[in-house]
Image 1 (cartoon, rainbow, N blue to C red):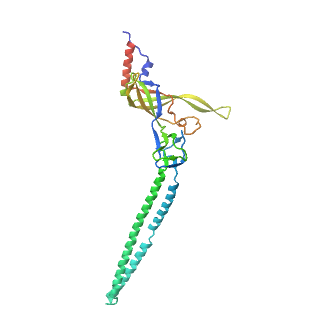
Image 2 (tube, rainbow, N blue to C red; image 1 turned 180 degrees about the horizontal axis):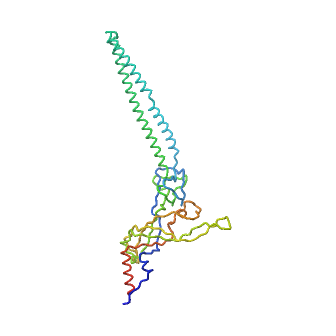
Image 3 (cartoon, rainbow, N blue to C red; image 1 turned 120 degrees about the vertical axis):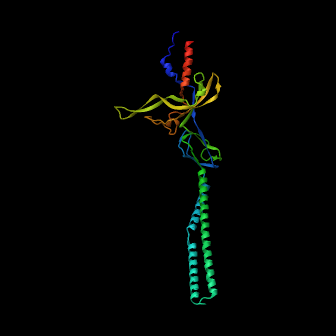
Length: 332
């Protein structure tokens, strides 16, 4: 039997499965809903614009709440001034000290000379001390009530501030604005989305793979590489001129990722659908920024809808199985 010789290039290609039927999509899309109902007063987002995390993209009308907050702030300031007013307590303490001093003097005089101070007078002095003690207790109770009142005013103010925050639409992620559902001045209902944002930093790739080339049960976790041709602009300075000249060139770009899931159903032609995830990267190098800041193509290397080729790097078991299958075909 003549031994079968397999070309070295074919052996080197056995560790990858090349797939060209690939769809690129955003990994996640977020609808930013209205937390209150009202007319849109500010709109800082446009379609296809880049939005940063925690950026305010829209705001509902807050005229009524601003007036309520001003009144609540005045009530809080009044309560704070009442709490910081110690006049009543100081007056009650002074009155108590004066009554106690008169009682002590009268008691001492009565002890030195019997009958120097009438019993009715001593009784009135003791009642004056007790009345002063009650006045001090009432002033202290009022101060505690003023402290509670100030805390209630502060809570009212915090609640209004919270309601004002509810009127703001804040982006929860860094991403691209895919759609703006309401225009300036339109009424936004509570719970309805105002803006849809997609996360451009993570992309999902959906590919159709031949089950004869790759075992679906062994796909999850395999590394993948995504390749595509991209046109870049470079800046060159002419030696005979002070002007810069831009030249376009085509280069192959690549991103790495891994397989995250496989559909359990088989498709016609013994194919199955595979899903991979890649981390997108921003443009680097000598690229000239294009017009329209915020566009996906201006900030990221890979965008949904681009034509790509995905290489799935097989495991050792799949490589051995493919080589065995190749040897049987050649022997036939």
